[in-house]
Image (cartoon, rainbow, N blue to C red; front, side, top):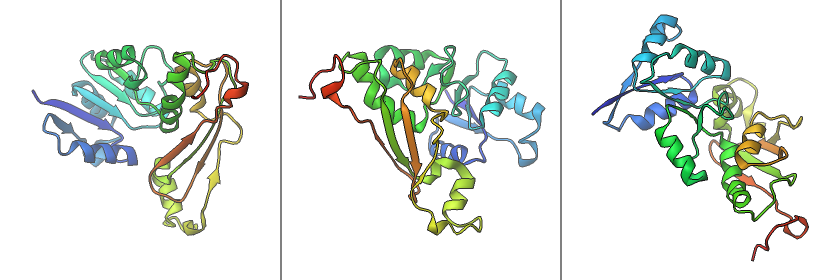
Length: 228
């Protein structure tokens, strides 16, 4: 049976990527709004409540507004923003974290899509913490670099020089230096950590890709097993 899918924020970078990937799948019918109706509240509310599945590709505030507009219990929502990633009423969409997490995601009506950096961090750290191989109360640090496509249209235009800023001269650019990056609570909570990790992200002149490193000084970490 064909299901209907509405991408709210389909004109953005993430929405366009999702629409492109869904184009070849015949089990979904994509619901779209005309350009002049994309910001029409009534049209948006109707699309949200009529669809079987909704993917939110919106800023946090707009994602929360869209959820509030969705009043029918049949609509299943996947939120790509950071708005609901630590909300206990939402299933965190990283089924590989555990068998229980896989079951929860499969049966949930509300699913928050994991962040890019947290996916790398949690994939490395969460299984080791859960197995008791490394402590949950250690002050972990995470160093990560990513391509610029994750920054959306504005950052893409800047790195590619299409905004008049001479993007070709941009190299390694660190950010989040105040240690309050919005991904940190997501990393801490879903890894089961007592302390927030020290997160040092950077963006480099590559369109796509990511590298995440978490140093583990095993020799001084209490209760840790040898890497051997």
